Length: 253
Image (cartoon, rainbow, N blue to C red; front, top):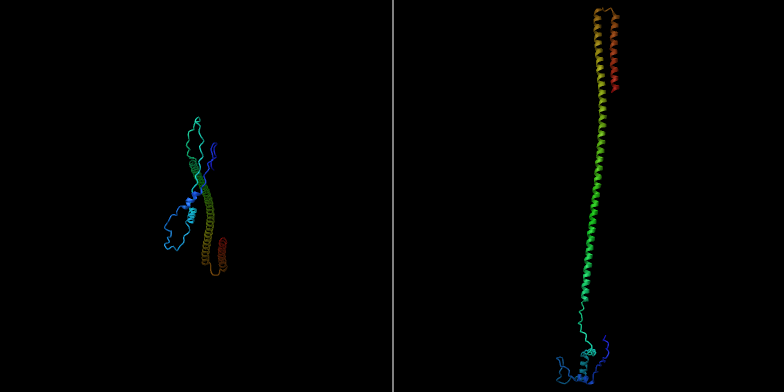
């Protein structure tokens, strides 16, 4: 937007183009180039140069308009002219960009730092959880080991008690069998003694009968029959005693 006119300045009027300038441009001869065709025979009719000049004028670029500078206000002699201050270079934009870059860098560093701290915190927390799990597993294993030890001790005591009971039972059965065996042996020995006594008694009776037979004659039948009857009775008694002993052995067995 053009600056406003100061007080005391007149508006500058741009002069209009005159017709003479336009005619002068038309009169200018068109520059010949390598593409121009020369008709030596004169069989081709060219258009007027005026038309070509008009076309070239239309194609030629228009001159740029010069911007009119405002006139300076007259300075009085009494007034002091303020010193001309040089325009300061605009450095705010680069500073702002540097500031933005610094802020972005600081934000990235802070973000990276926070991520690193979070990673370290998560790693430490995970490590602590692993340690807790390992400690709990260790305690569980120790409890299981203690329980197994108690169970083994209990089973060992039970096995020892059972072994002692079985040993007592075996000892009792062995003692009982030994007593039975001793009783059988004693009964057998008693039976053998009785048999021996009976044999001795029978031998004694036979000897008495033989001596009695020698001392008496053949006519003494009564005496002979009485001795024979007593001997037969003794033999029957010995057989009955033997049968009774055999029956007792069978009952005990």
